[in-house]
Image (cartoon, rainbow, N blue to C red; front, side):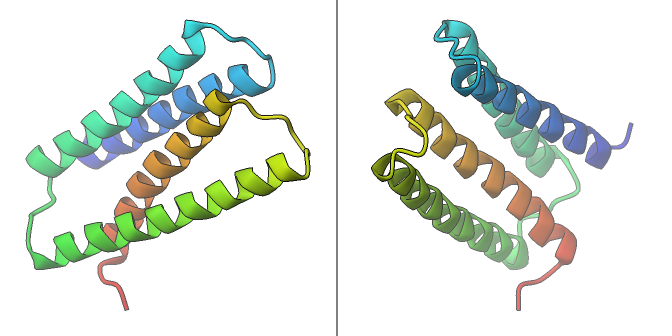
Length: 129
């Protein structure tokens, strides 16, 4: 399998594991170590596959790729702040009762998934204008 397809499969499987852990935590109200294992295994798969792809893959480290990466990470932080504001208002209006663990899990998922997917999208697009 070519390297880009492997990266896509790894990103999707990592995201599925993280979402599964989040689903167990919120919907099933299962408060065990299994939910933490799912979430952090998904994060580890995503981080490891992105690092492996960037180090050994087709991505070269030049000014353009660094610019794309920094722009993607900046936008990821912005999305994380929006998620934080959303969590605040959900808690304030008592739409859903979230624990600290659930809130942190949501924020970690938003940070990692948006950073990874935005970096891939910007690299595929080619440039930021």
